Image 1 (cartoon, rainbow, N blue to C red):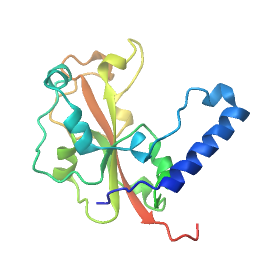
Image 2: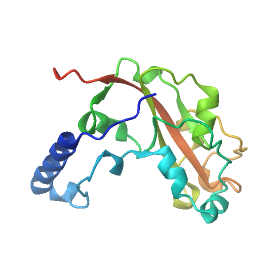
Image 3: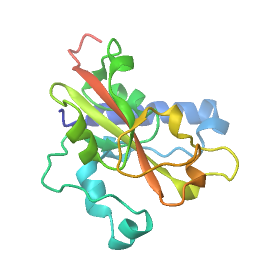
Image 4: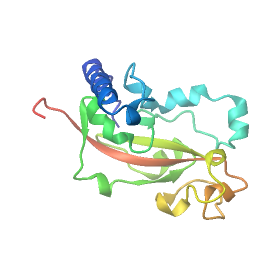
Length: 183
C-alpha cells in the first residue's frame, strides 16, 4: 500500500487552474474552493476514524472496526476523485489495470483488508453513501457498484428503502505508478 504525500507545487498548480476555470466558466466552478493540501480531497482512513463520535457510530450503525489493522493507503474521497491523484500527488493511476482492480461496497476498511491482497503500489478510495441523503424515488442502488462484502443484509434495490443500513462505502482499489518527471 502507498501513503500519498502532499505535493505543494501540484496543489498550487491545481488552485491556479481552478481560478482560471472560475473566470472562464463561473457557472460551473463558482462553488469550488481552493485546496490547502491534497487531504482536502483524500482524507486518510485513520483520520476519519478518529473524527467519529459515539453518536455517529450509533446513528449510522457502523460496523465495529479492527483498530489494530494498518490502514495506510486507505482514503475517504468523493466519487471519481481518483482523477485528481495525478494532479495532486507524485503518482498517476495505472489505467492499464484500473478496470481489473477490485471494487465494491463495504461497511468499513477492515473488510477490504480481510478480503483482498493489498500488496504493491495500490491505494483504496472509499466514498461514503448515506441513506439519509437518498431521494424517496430513485437514488443509490446496490447492484451498480460491485459486490457487497459487508456484514449487513440488504433487502431492497435502493439504499433509501433499507431499514437497518444507514451508511455504506463504495470502494475502489487503484494501482499507482510513481511519476518519473517525464509526464
